[in-house]
Image 1 (tube, rainbow, N blue to C red):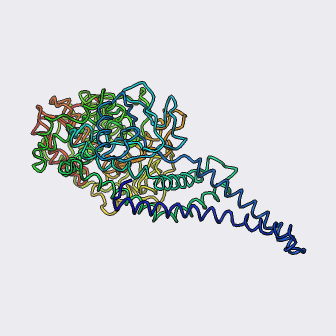
Image 2 (cartoon, rainbow, N blue to C red):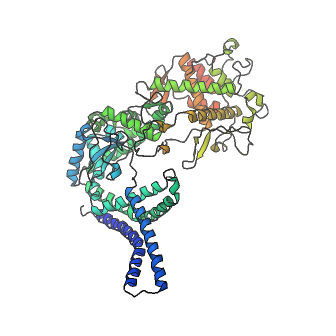
Image 3 (tube, rainbow, N blue to C red):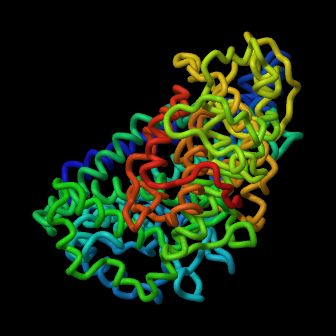
Length: 634
């Protein structure tokens, strides 16, 4: 380790962590030392008498108990498996140019080269120590969930000291080779301090304590030994709290030393490359939440997410003047060219992203299959809209909404529909518009429950098959059905956040509540995400998936808005030949004559929230969409 100021601070803090370990060992040996003194005093005739005999017995028993407990704690700390980040391991045969680039960079920095390289579906990069015995050598299916992407060989053997370099996969596809080298220089420089014996020992000790706390908290692992597990956890947490400040300062010192050492390598280019880091993060987040999430909910996972982020960022640079000039970089060599088979690696990271952010199965199956970007509009967007439209009409059927309403009822804007056509038994957009548009003189749902279906929904909702997830402050499906007819003060209609903005349209509130119940039941009846995971040492807890939920569950009002929008899009596709499309920044979109429709959302919101169908009906007339014509459902 060099003479950087940060490195000296890191070593001093590492020694402080090791002193805590030494103090814990000294405390554990203290009763044994007292027992040795008493026994030696008795054998030499100094400590004689009944009192000293009793003291010797008590202290010896106490020393044995303390030594046994300390041995158990030390064994758990040493053997507990530290947490490993879910990654896609890249064998050297699958990316020889990338390994060569990292070794050259390490030589320029005068630090050890990383022992292996792995990819993560996130916009971040770091070094990760995987030298624990539980992490190697690799089995046929290693600790990484997809081992050796792009190659059938085993994962590159890890050395005893050098950590694994984890690279964010969006960086490889968006950044150029020079930019990637500049961005990774401070990360690779961290292998120097990592090789320092004191820092390495302190890190192993802290990771062991953290793993021991996690192991002792696993209630299902040792039901008969819960008191012992609780004691081990208490001791580990006590030592971990004592190490917390020193460990944090040690890592800050390591980061400062790495940054100082990396200043001599591509410093000017790194300043420019940092702009690409922020841009890549924005594009990746947008791609996951707007494009990938709808596909995941349909049981399909986009197999080229990293290639998609390039398209999304190129579109962003075209729309946003702040990103002007970024697209001109695309003529340079992308960093993904350093991989032998970029498509295979992209597919592996895309599947891992679906698993981490949505909780999908670990392998493809009939209900979990990949989808290409060319197939996305037909396989995801069209299916999503027609499935939502079908669910909307099923809920209307359960509410007892008539398919042939009174043709003489007033309509908000546009001509009155033809009764002969409007009386069709098929699902129509007109049925939705008429139901969500309260006619003049119509009473509220509480006064005339028969017009709105189930009267109990006006006082309370059913048990929605959801439970509050306290860790995320959201609701997740639980699969339970509860009784109806609870008092309104116990279970309010709608989501907890909806009481501040009461619905002006009671029909919308009732329909939204029923949609929330229906969606929750469908999600609860779906196959558990972890069902496809094999039982051979997974690197994380399957019960905790998804590890990083992208968004909280949609509220009932958002669900209703999405379903009404889907119904409008289905009517547009079946009457005027509109087509489903994919917008890289906004996700599913409707194309009319090849032009993206951008003014539909506020008109749907006006209908859902205010019961005002005039803007939407005017829009339908303008485009020639016939709401009274039956549509094809999914």
